[in-house]
Length: 209
Image (cartoon, rainbow, N blue to C red):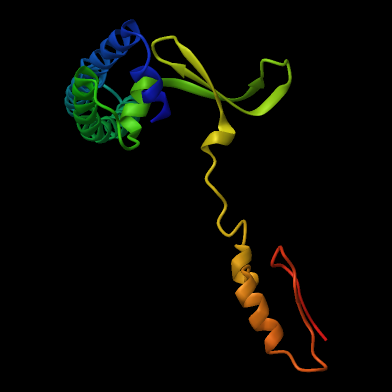
């Protein structure tokens, strides 16, 4: 979201470049082309397998040659079949990713703000994030974040600004001891002759004797 805000408030050329990058992602059909190539290759192997069987039945090749060639074809078929399944699975998820990228493209065009994190949007904007670096004083800063956008632009951010607050990191002093004078008087009025209560101003110490 911070990456998006950086681009949102940046110059018009950056936004144009980003829109072109998204358009390129949406038009990328490399997986479909690879799936088509594998499918055609599997068809070719099936044809080779069929021809091999015919040659063996006709007695034109020995059992040794047949077994050797058949095992080669089977191994390649198995490998390509697994690749085909992987690509088909990836293509199914890519449909959803491209849908979100299309929505993000419309969001950029309308110049509206992004209200929640979206991984597909993030990956379409950011090339990589480098953790740690050297600050303006020449000192090593492990909390420095360098955001490298796919447009070629870079932004430096202080990672400490994005840390979530620790739960129960601090107790409220008014839960440990009353702070107003009326409550102080009430504590003392309830004490006996041989009992003395002391409540610190910070509300952290209560001593009874």
